[in-house]
Length: 322
Image 1 (cartoon, rainbow, N blue to C red):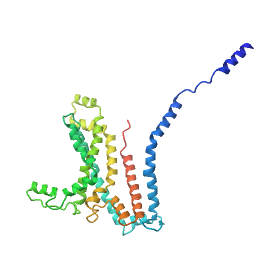
Image 2 (cartoon, helix red, strand yellow):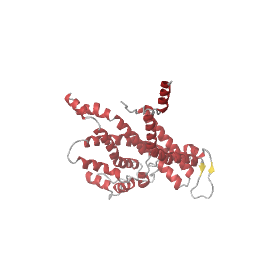
Image 3 (tube, rainbow, N blue to C red):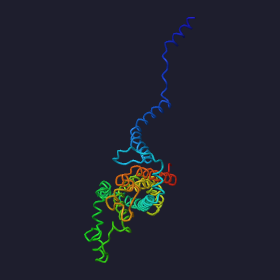
Image 4 (cartoon, rainbow, N blue to C red):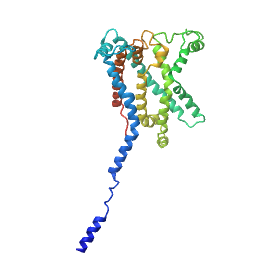
């Protein structure tokens, strides 16, 4: 009996064992930490993407006028029908979408190829290379509005224009001055050249970071095997840069469809709607035509188009996870 009492006292006095700090507890802490770290981004996504998009959908289904004392009038999908099929508004929308597609079709591959070439040239351990990298990246720092104003002076149509003066000096006067921004043949191409010059530095920095992350041992092994510079670029550089190039292409595509500042400052959509873009049409519809509902419908349709293109790119250009 005494032995049983002693055992009972020992069991009663022994504190309960603490729960082991195993994988379950560690997983819960990691989940809480991840939620806390992602919370600012989620709040920003909610405030600046989700709520504005829902508001745009609501506005697109109502007839809303800026400064009008009348309350919004629900019109359903009428605004969408007008911008897509109405003979008065649909041609401008489809022409704007075509201009966006042409711009992206040219800018994305050309800018990516130029950024890759510049990054390869700047990825060398030479004296003063930092200054060259800064020089190529500097146009990205300048606001697009400032860049567009400067290039408007370059594209001036008379002989005082910098581009016309340079071409005249090089050709000895054989090349006549061109109206780069007033001619529908050259207007969109001029904006494309400006955009590539201003944005190539951004892609160059991303690709340069990817190049510096490639292990040097791969090139050393290729040099031992006497691989040529082209083969090293083809079988080492490009495969190692696959994910970086996919990211650059996707970001460049999204930025290309956001074309607005250059058009607004240089051409105002002209001549003959040759440079009108969807973003420019949406802004002018909202503030010049005072039709917020139709402008919201344009932005909703445009968002869905760009989202679809991005998802297609993600499907086609699969990243290498190995």
